Image (cartoon, rainbow, N blue to C red; front, side, top):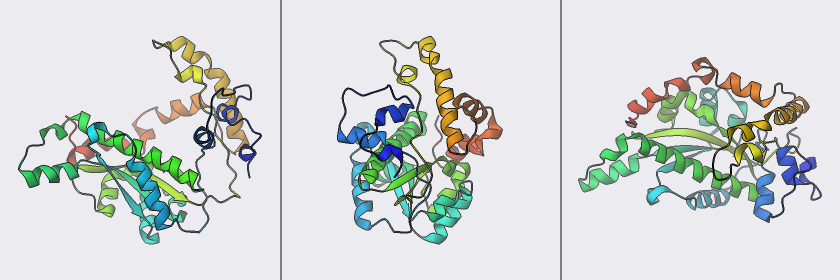
Length: 274
């Protein structure tokens, strides 16, 4: 059990790395969300079919633009396939070790199949808006799934490295055209021996604007946040503050691990994003 698991802990304060921050309104759902952390070490116990169905039901309950439901998810439990996907996704070992790897797909092919069966045009799917719609639908569904699985005692970690080799992922998973894997989610029972905690987030003053956007007020708290995150990183064997990591991650194409090629990949996958 980590310190943040104790009922006496101010979980909102832990989320922001600021013990003086206290929520005046909360609920069991909010308290659960405040405990969220990425899990990269899993016990060997499988995720049951009943748990998977419950998580997908929660995902299906997420909002979706115009009820288009432009997403799908591929549940991967086969150890050999998880190993191959791990190799494609920056060789992150926890993908192979987690009993379940969910690959979330922006999926417009279902709609293309529907149009073909009915002899109808589907020209709007060639535009960027439709691709964004699929990505947003997948993200909303996946976040619902994370809240649900954590309520069942499971843990997870998102994997953006799925996009490092999006075409190879599509081949491995047999994805149809007009669809692309946008991220993965390794899922399982958290290993209680993993050294991890609740990572502090940007203060609300940095993300919450009132009526209009105020950049100077939003950025005023960044130095203090850098100190908090640097302290968290040191405690967990990491280096650097938030600002340093952001600037390194977004410095240029070399830092994108192949994701700078995504526009061409989307076009070849039938998502031209005009």
